[in-house]
Amino acid sequence: MIEDTQLFQLLKVTRRVRGGIAPVLAEHGLHPGQELLLAQLWRQDGLTHGQLVARLRVQPPTITKALQRLEKAGFVQREAGDGRGRRVYLTSTGRDLRVPVEQAWAEADRQMLDELTPPQQASLARLLSRLTLGPK
Image (cartoon, rainbow, N blue to C red; front, side, top):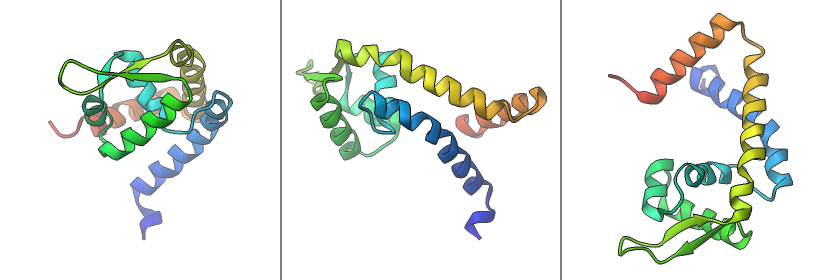
């Protein structure tokens, strides 16, 4: 059964933890998932649509829709690029979201890890790193 898989258990944990982040996002006018796009721009402003697609590993229409919403909300602006497509830049309002959003993620992470002992936390970090990076 699907519910018996490890992957399903990971999804349940993710949904539970995201539930703690969602109210903070909503308070700032964000929908869940939009902060992941903003995080890429907080790391490197001025990315192209294609770069965001590659970094977030989602379909181009997903990025297009998210950018339209973020632009309408005043968090980003799109400008003509250097021939490789339009570049996306944070507005000052978009930059100001970084602290509260990152604090919400850190708090959710802390709450999740508080349920584990320090050795379990270290094991989880190693396992997730391995799964994120894939096989060597």
